[in-house]
Image (tube, rainbow, N blue to C red; front, top):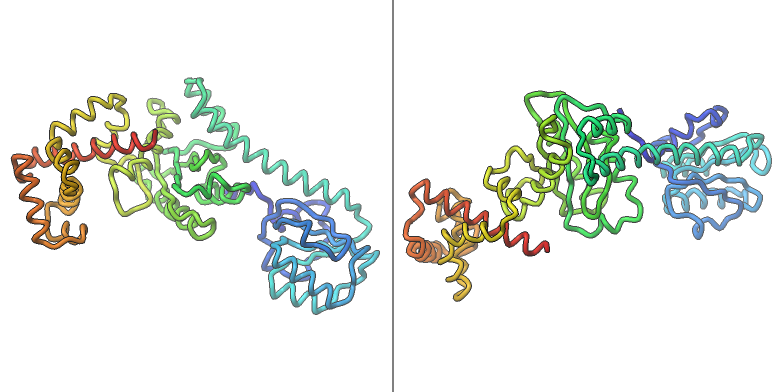
Length: 399
């Protein structure tokens, strides 16, 4: 199922009013999206368009020589006009082959319409299609937003609202969150296209944008794996970078929605999973809540910051104090040492330091700790203390 939200040139051609229209050129551009329409009555096009319009070429003030019509096609391509709809029968009787060749070359659809069809009827039909699709999108996004931020805790009413918005709960449903540290997402004046891409890739009509996050409801009928959803997340991360310039995008899948684990809970877990990038760094930009270590999940559900501080100070207080006084980078050294499974050579490479420097730091760390982390329980305690320290620092920075 494809969710439109922004209509395409082809969608307009499927309207009843377009049954007598003819596509003369630019078939390669029929999938272009249309945001509005523009009635062109003279040669001055550039000041009046913003991109993705259906340009209706009426012709009363347009020079109809071949060179000018080719120029108009070039301008439409440059200004990202989605298609040119030409009225045939009053000012235009036929279109020159050179114009059509240029339209084919640039994938600018050129469509003809009998002049007997009222322009007002055309604009009304296009506007109705545009507004009905956008209303459908808003309805789905607002339903999910109301559930997440509302006070109604009745899960049955949540499911009913989602179904009314057009989403059928799958065998396994989740809230997915995409977050970027770029300001570009929150500053976008036109978010319809990226929402359309999110909905189509995740196969859902339920998505909305909140500041630097995109939130969607998605799911799978595969009871054994969420592999298809994680692959979809990877496609979205690539798409965000390549198509929209959002370079620092992360995708997170929340916990599975059940009658015991609500949509709100899944959203909270998805948000925490994507925030965990700052606490539990891994190379992948797509994460599944179920894969996070238990200590990370517990930290995000703990409000007692003094307790968390006492936990890491108990294990790492001496190292943190030594770093504060001497700027010795012992804590980051220990963290990289653990990340490389206690392999000093690989940790040194990660830190871009000489092996001897690494060994000297480790001797100092082990001396302050009172052990060399070879005991599994002591290593476990030290690693968890690092998570606690990084989590609390992240919370302080996000205040």
